[in-house]
Image (cartoon, rainbow, N blue to C red; front, side):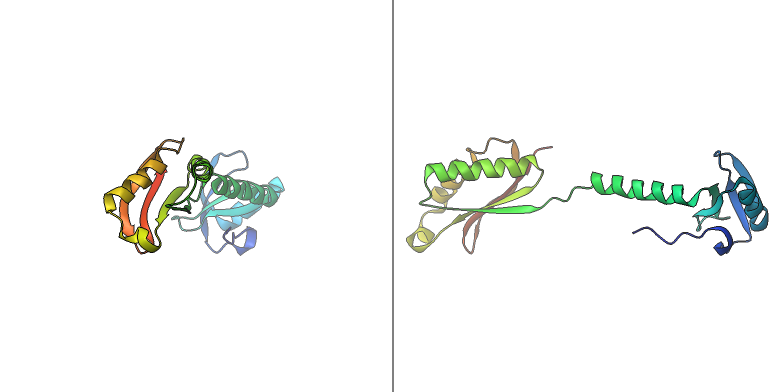
Length: 170
């Protein structure tokens, strides 16, 4: 994901705003003068910001520059966290032990920061039961979850039965 960086003679601009190896601003100077200063320091001239007017370049070791760029990319990647919507399905006849295991798994997912979609799967004659009774059944299961959460999507009917989505409170 690192963009192609121009160094030394591949820099196209005639004038550059140059930063020295020590971080000091050397001002706007010609490309040739900047290259000469980089050569005398035994370092490279690296175009840091090509879209600026005039473009910004820095005198430093290219290997060190690449290392710093990769380090920045790693930090950005480490800080970004993708939240996933996990699914779990319970049925009317699911036993208490199985419900407690599923609630523990949901608590773990919430700790990791994921959203959880909970489906109360209805089959056969369960499909025709009263909505409020089924909703109570689903809410009773939600009380087993130990991690704090908020309801992102209220309990509603779905093609398979009832469904709700919960997520960790911030």
